[in-house]
Amino acid sequence: MKRTGGKKALKPALKPVGPLILDKPVIAVTGSAGKTTTKEMISAILSRRWSIYKSMYNKNFLGNTRAHARRIKDEHKAAVLEYGMLNSGHIKKHCQIIRPSIGVITNIGTAHIGNFGGQIAGIASAKSELIRHMKTTGKVYLSADCPYTKQFMQQPYVGPFVGTFVTIGIYNEANYRASNIRLDEWGISFSCLINNEEEPFFIPILGEHNVYNALFAIAVSHSLGFPITVIREGLRTFHQQSKRLTQYRFSGNVQVLDDTYSSNPHAAKAAIDVLCQVGEGTKVAVLASMLEMGAYEVQGHEEVGRYLSQKDVDYLYTLGNSARHIARGAIRSGFPANRVVHCRTKAGLHRMLAKRMGPNTSFLVKGSHRLKMGETVIFLCRQTGKIGS
Image (cartoon, rainbow, N blue to C red; front, side, top):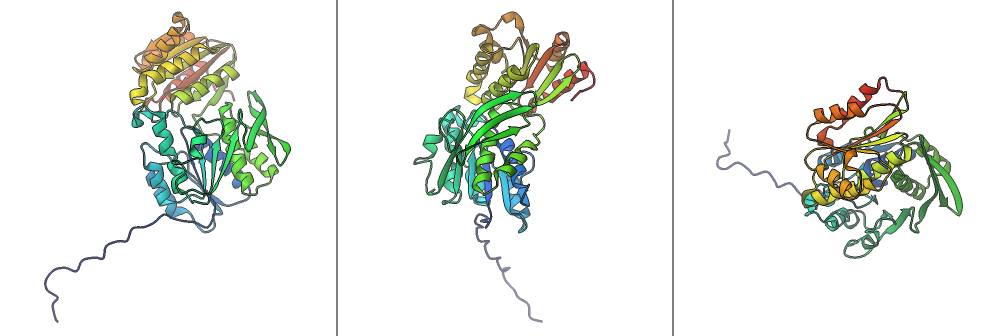
């Protein structure tokens, strides 16, 4: 037998793999807030008629998108994905793995602002990578009430994109605009003008900011040819994710709003609004530090405090080193100092909240995910007894 001597044969270099391009609608949702809710609302509608693939929960990192590329099958008529980011270039990389034909940018806010030198403009530029790297003839859905939308529709944000822009909104003119918004303890009713008809909708979730998420779902599904009746039913039966303004009610007219999944100034102010809208009796805001704020840390926390001072909130409890700026911002803006309690530890916070417990009281609990403020929700629920509904 003849031997093959010398060096081992080199394996041929792997060719770079391009993005997965599918012959079906691929909807990518990004933005500073509302990504998961918008993705779930779109999915709730599309799944009533189609077999769809959707990203689970809030799994929106690059590794998740690589996994989606392996799991999307021929039988799926559409894919609804959530594209998250921590830094510039992340949205581009998502698109290089799976190229969307439909893009949604919910809004531009302060989430992860510490990774962008404290500059919201940096976040806007990074989010706009979706427009520049998705299918060039696709559709992009934007909020007419977001100050960055006009820029997104122009160079240099557009890049090679030559597709269609569709807008949603509440306050500014838009292709899909909500009106007659009415809130109650069960959810939100509103109207939207579609094909020159005022169509009524209901979403079983708290917070006026969620109307924007519903409008994106309406716009995307309507553009895909779904009948209004199917869209309406999909939204009506939508199930919200846990720890996102989940409401617990107890005897004695006590309620706890659990908004502990994450926090940033934009989201914290929206949660305060919900407390004021649905809370009854004494309203108590329990706000922990917001992380990943970087150079925006002091300004962002004080901004929340100032906002709270102008709202119908009776007591403010803060937890964590950065959250002391929320307390300071509120007091400096006129909120009574004797109604503000800053705590260094969660155990100390719970001792103080135990003294605040009583009938006719509504609590909002919010803080960044790593601070595990769900423990405070559990504490409050145990203090009040068995959960009602």
